[in-house]
View 1 (cartoon, rainbow, N blue to C red):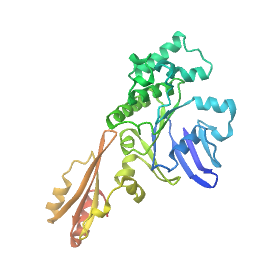
View 2: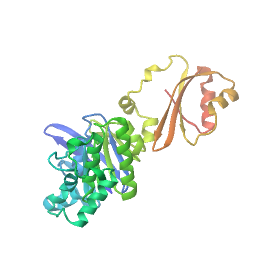
View 3: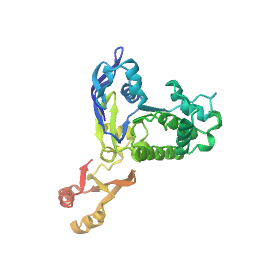
View 4: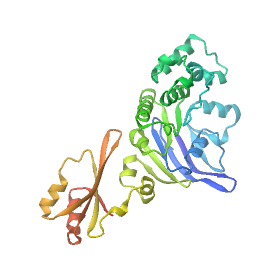
Length: 320
């Protein structure tokens, strides 16, 4: 478990993280999302001990990161694999040698049968078993990131930290990388922390998410809760155009999950004998579960009847 409590971090007179408190459970895929400059990457560097902080605490499996130094800190860091946006591969080394690099840093032999089997197994896991002797310049962006993932796993980490790991990739390749991360999480039980500004990343793999703005956590919870019924700051982040609503009447936004089977809209029109307009709607896929919202516009005199009907049928709603 990773516990971050009341974390404050400043660079000279600029405060980057302000009273950040989040809990990341073992085996979770946790997303940290926000615009550039929100403090996401700094928070990640604080977690793995690369960045000191002024106050607060980070506790990983009972160890306070701020209390350990030197070799003990390096041992803790070895339990946390790191994946970056720009891959950080060495062009002079083969794929095999790049994956083996962390082992060399720890003074371990990389040509033993045990290590060879381990690295080849990791290359098979990431779908690159035939690229062991290739150089990074011979690989695509997606393949380079797969090498970086294998390298991050070679020390058998308990935690995998991903800093904008898919930002440089196109949507199709991003989807494949995210599927790989899900597989690693499921099969190896590794906790994954994902820093990103891409909504698709959060929707596809994250079980929990924290939204950062100006160094503060403004909201946290399940992605479908945060992004289907967003607070105004998340709406601005998603660039939702609320001004596209009709000026007359009352605008209701209704929220549905994939378990919603009743034809509620036609039922309501028939049961209440009223007319209304459909303004817009959307469906969102969160880890293969479908959630959606629909905005309708009704006459002012019918608003109370609509509210009562929605409450009776236990439909979540709000007036925009």
